[in-house]
Amino acid sequence: MRIQSTPIALPTTALPQRPRLAVTLGDPAGIGPEVVLKALAEPSLTSTCEITVVGSQRLLRQAYLQLKRQQSLGDREAEALADPDQLLILDLPLDEATESQITVGTGNAASGAASFAYLETAIARTLAGEFDGIVTAPIAKSAWKAAGHEYPGQTELLAERSGTQRFGMLFVARSPHSNWTLRTLLATTHIPLRQVPDVLTPELMTAKLELLAACLQQDFGLSTPRIAIAGLNPHSGEQGQLGREEQEWLIPWLAQARRQWPQLQLEGPVPPDTLWVKPGQAWYGAAGADSSAHDAYLALYHDQGLIPVKLLAFDRAINTSIGLPFVRTSPDHGTAFDIAGRGVANANSMKAAVQLAAELARRRMKSFPST
Ligand SMILES: NC(=O)c1ccc[n+]([C@@H]2O[C@H](COP(=O)([O-])OP(=O)(O)OC[C@H]3O[C@@H](n4cnc5c(N)ncnc54)[C@H](O)[C@@H]3O)[C@@H](O)[C@H]2O)c1
Ligand SMILES: N[C@H](C(=O)O)[C@H](O)COP(=O)(O)O
Image 1 (cartoon, protein in one colour):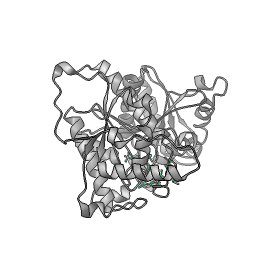
Image 2 (image 1 turned 90 degrees about the vertical axis):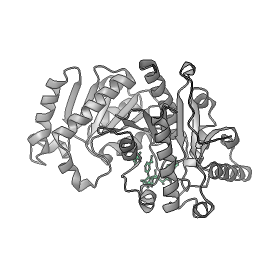
Image 3 (image 1 turned 45 degrees about the vertical axis):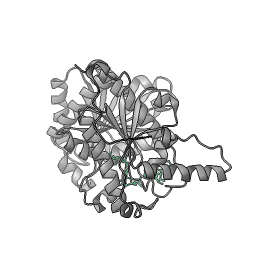
Image 4 (image 1 turned 90 degrees about the horizontal axis):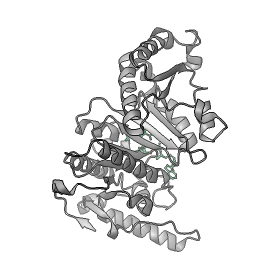
């Protein structure tokens, strides 16, 4: 089903009861179309929110037909796929020349430009009040760069276009073993490792902690959360013997943070190698672990936080942008060019991203009903 790309002005009396989510296709050469079609085949998701796919209807249909062909030839039970003709699609067609440059499995300037346009459009329509949140299928940073878009990722474009100065990258995952929820915020993200010690400052940590506390309160109903803050160096510097950052500023900053936010139960700087023991035990449901694990973790750099997240929950963790004026979630994986087009992508993280976006949007609609 194709809808014209004209603003949908709802009369104020007809406020939507279900959250309206824009789901962007991501890089059309990656697994985005596949995981979107698999996720939107879930009635439990599509019944709780109104979903509009933002991207090329033609490329989505091509992905659908390719997956259907593979399933007809395969000996495995065919995984349900949403029929593009049954979906609400905000169609952003490519001209013939550009579309001919899209090769499934290879990100390039054409696929980068397409995925950039999908997200740009979803942001503009959300800011115009047409959507309550955005779920973004994966893009390839390298393809964005090839298309001339110098952003570290989707998060930065979302922040720039929504005029958001302070924002964060939070990973959320609900354990299938214990139903315990892992929440990990990254203090720094897409920067080279060697820059991390210089980018980390007390001001940055304060900004991230404020965002995290507000998110835990607003989106998860946690007003006195237990938060663990990671150390930077091995053994958190071993009293300065293995690095000085903890002694020089991180420990003093934490002492000041405890005074500034008495409602937060702050632990740290926790030695990074043992920080993840309790969440790991809580994830697998060890007796009593969920009471000793924390409500949230503040990791100091990308892989310090994401190695444990993806180790425990690669197939279900959700990247949630906090601080934006609307909900945004994304699967934790990327475009997976190496398996794109083969029909073997796991769509659970995409499903979890849609489900969390609907939950958060619904919660915010109740907290801040439109006037
Ligand atoms: N949400 C996002 O937009 C996002 C997240 C991470 C990486 N990326 C981008 O994706 C591109 C590729 O990144 P990468 O190779 O580091 O990570 P990746 O997640 O794309 O792939 C890593 C490995 O995991 C596998 N994999 C990923 N998702 C899978 C799924 N749903 N089902 C089964 N297997 C899956 C891949 O086949 C690959 O072997 C890069 O350009 C990166 O910037 C985007
Ligand atoms: N760092 C994320 C991850 O590894 O899952 C991902 O690259 C997020 O990037 P965006 O800002 O494009 O969502």
